[in-house]
Image 1 (cartoon, one colour):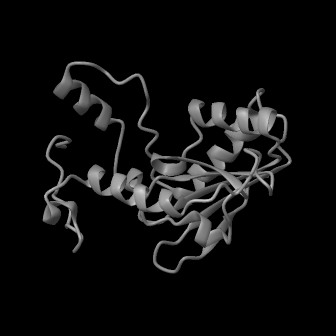
Image 2 (tube, rainbow, N blue to C red; image 1 turned 60 degrees about the horizontal axis):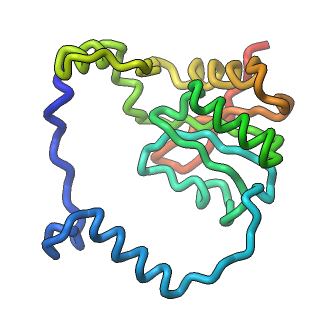
Length: 185
């Protein structure tokens, strides 16, 4: 498995390459346009709906749109796979204990890149760079099983105060629908 030679991504029609700048330059320019019109919404850091959403970082997931959320409604925590890792527990703990969230929504999705990886990814990375990553890949073969594992990690964490409203879903990237995953009895 090669990890150092990814396939080239298609360039968007208005790519930064066309303008001679980098993608980051394009993002900074967009921020300047945004800031010119920006008005402080006067919000608090505490989410209005008192919910934290943990989801995959996949670029196809527009969580606010898919869940009917507005700015300020939730905390959004994203990582590869939407897996509940120690760092997610850290963020959820701060979200609950310091910022008042009470509900946790976990979202995995169809076509996830972690479905095709194994822990061999770590070994290949170690062979390439000469250092073993301190983190696990957290790859999985079955979406529902991993959603259940993530729900269990939230429900058993000693750091989290609110574990009654923890629900897990799989987002279908072709239909846009969520399918709820029931926890094990």
